[in-house]
Structures are given as C-alpha cells and as structure tokens.
Image (cartoon, rainbow, N blue to C red; front, side, top):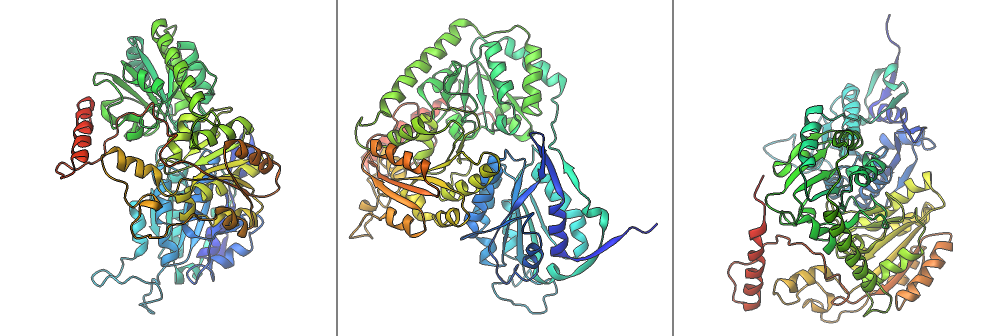
Length: 621
C-alpha cells in the first residue's frame, strides 16, 4: 500500500514538523518548540516567512531587534524551561545569520538547545555572486554559515528537500540529549527553501518526546560509594546539571542524610536554599571564604552536574592535590575531567543510587561542624558588606536591596562583568532554580536579551512573578534594544542598571596585576577627551519603559517596589563606585597571563605573586 504524501516546500515542511512535536512537562503536554525569534530579510522572508504566517497562533514569532540578542533570548528561554523546551531563531543570509555566531557560542558553552534556521546562498549557483555572499575562490561550497560548525552541536546545510526527513529529527535528538545538548544549525539555501517534495504524511504525525534518563553503571556507583565511605572530609559540588536533571530534592536529601557539606558552582546557584545548614556557599574564583576553605581541605569531592570550569576550580588550585574527585555527570567528557572517578549517568538517578549504596555513612561531625562555622563567618561578612549605607554605593548593596524585597519565585538574570561575582557571592536563595548567572560564555549583552527570553518562558508558567535583570553600564550600552522588545510584547522586565563608569571589573583586574588604569573606565580612556555620563533613564524611557534614577540603595529599594507594581518594563539606574565596595573575601586563584618581562616594577611584582600561587595547581588532565 502506498503511503499518503503531502507536497510542501522545504520551508513549509520544516514548520509543519516543528508544530507537531510535543513534550510533557510537570504532567502537562505542550509543544516542544515554543515558537521563534525572527528578523526577516531576502534570505528567509519569501519562503520561511510564508510558512510561518500560517502557524502564528501555534508557533508565535517574536520579532527581534538584533539577531545576536534573539539568540540570547532563545538561550534564556531554554534555561528557564530547564532545557525541556526550545525556541528557534531565523535570520536572513549574510550578516543577519553571522550575527547569530556569538549567541550560538553562548548556547554551546552553556549546553542549551537553540534551533537556528538561517538563510544560505543558492545551491544552483546560477545567480552567483549574490547579495551578501562571501566568495572563496578555491572552494565554492564554503560560506559564512560554515563558521557555525565550531559553535553548534549539530550542523547541516539542506541541498535537497528530502534531506529534512533525516536532518530535523537528528537536530531535535541532539537538542534533547542530556549529554550532547546544545544548539543545532540548519542552513537553508534560498532556492531550496521554496522547492517542493512529496513528504510522507507520517513525518508530520504528532510525536511526544521524552528526555532520556541514563542510569549509571552499577559498578561505577559501587566504586564511588566505596571511595566516599573512606572520606574524612567529603564535600559535594553542585552544578547546573542538578537543576536540569530535576535532582534538587535528591541532592538536598542526600547531603542531609549523610551530613556532607555542599558548595555551589555559578551555574548551580539556587540548588540549595540560603538557610540550609549544609549550604556552605559558592566555590571558586567568585566563591566564598567558607566554600573555598572546605574545598581546599576536602579529601573526597563529589562533583555533580558540573563541567568544572576554571572559575569553579580556581584554575585547579582550589582543591588539595591529593583530593579524589568523583564525577557524577551525564556527559562522559565532564565526568572524567582531571582523572575523576566517573559515574556516568543522570544526576537524579545517580544520586539516588549513591544514596542507597552509601548506607548509613555520615561525614565526621568535626568536619561538618568546621564547615558550618566557616559558613557562619561568611554569612556575617556578606551581611556586613551588603548593608545599605556601608561605604559608597556598590553592587553588593543593590543586590541586597532587591533580594530583601523580591518574591521567592522571581527570576534573577545577569551575565558578564563584575555582577556575576557579586550576585554569586551575595544572592540569598529563597527558592530553588531562580538564578541565571550566565558565566559559561561570560557574554556581555546577554542580560537584557536573556531576561526577555526568560520572561517569555516565565510568563507561560508563573505569569505573576517577575524577571529581574542586573546589568552594568558596559553591557547595557553593548545590547539594550530588547527593552523595546519587552515593551512591544508585553513581557515585563525589571532592569537594574548599575553604572560604574565603564568596564570597572576589568579595570580592577588591570590594577590587581600591577597595571595602571587604561582604556576600561571611560575616565581613563585617552581617546575620549571629554567623557560624560550617559542618561540611561532617558534612553530607557525612549524605548517605552518606566525609568528612574536613584541616588542610593535605599532609594533603589523604593523604586523596586514601584517597579513590582508597574504594568510594564521598568529600568532603575544607580551609579556605583568603580573602586570600592567589591567583595574582597573568597576569591580563589585564577590563572591569567601576565608579562614575564616588563619594565614596570609593579607589574613584575604582581607577576611574581601570581606565579607563586601556581605551586598549588593540580596537573592531572
């Protein structure tokens, strides 16, 4: 019997397929693809645009202002949905598509599902060279879209309509794979988008997807449990994978039952509540004295759902050289880092298996008491440095003012610069899974765009809660147009713009390595003879937001209350000191390249100090 077919264009078939993919989240069936972000151009408007017009109620298309920010918004959306749903981004051929490279890299580094449907040059090559085409004289198949091979988990260029029968399911399988999750790129040549094919109707049948839970190997669990039972000073490093696995409850119960102190990575912030007695703080370069104190003394480290980046490991100086690491991770690559004992599998299943295998083991009371004492010291320190009026205006004071007033389910979003360190250090978690500190790629400009994407997702689940964005003036100036997007789409944000007069955290690094301030703070940029302060309030208001400027953290708190009551995006601006008020405790060593030869004695002195700490660095691969 011949199977029924549908004659569709390539573009129509792609959209019809996406509209029929579903997933169950918390018992509710919903579309796997939440819609898309799009800017049309000649490379995607005539065919993909035609296909999207007919499904605008089921796959809503949010018009972006910048392709890079669209990619950031899609990443923020995926993170809010814990990688269970995704958005696509569509851009025209040429610069529209190449603008997505940075956001693809961000999604790749953070292991986030984003589908990129991008225009491409003509397969026939008959009209070549075409508008916005990059010609490579020795390789006519090479184009700008090939650059995405380095920053995506799945890459394909469709040269015949039938290819999507294989390519689309493969792209979705990649985006839903816990171990290989990341962005998928599909290049759509402008002629092929409109070509037709008789597709089997079964290709478009409704499908309900599930995200795989890989059970760990029983022998690996047994080996890890045997090692943990020997531990005199165990700790747990809780990473972002704990949340993606839905393993927060299991992790908390495991730590409580076995009395093992927990430290959090940047991506793992908001795994444990602030008041949990075993929550010893964030670890690493942006960490706390408390977490780093136990990390450097630990003899066995259970690293759960973390890729162990340098900000967590202090460039591999945060742990004792003879400490044993157990890597519980769904990804083999991450589970085996630095000669870790691997337990390859889902965090929820892995923790449950380890919990059973450990039996009645508990960490020695003297060790847990030490960790809790260190935690108490850190809490006292952060209470003091965040106190409103304690020194000049600072990130820490602004963070605490908002923290005290926000709803437990409000979502916090920040990214590059000094705010990730300060939020990681000082944010007091009121509810789990409520913090998005994008530090996988440390990407300036993510804050507002990622917040917009997170708010779109949040509105679908918790419409009465707020998405709160912390950004510095540098990131604001780099990418701010999604203030306008949030107003246009009625997806309210609360944005805190903390203006320290430039790239203050890099100026801090510059000074801390013996260098003079140069080209980071606006006041220290020689090509700007007459620096002035940007009127962020007026700028934000021009994009339709409520906006106001405050003088201190007390006024910021009152403005935040007004923003909570407002019916649209609010921007609150406060100047902070570029030099004072930074968190001074907690920082582990971080390897940065410093000059081995210099005529500046201060730089030479700092180089010697930095290199002296290298003796603590683990050299395992």
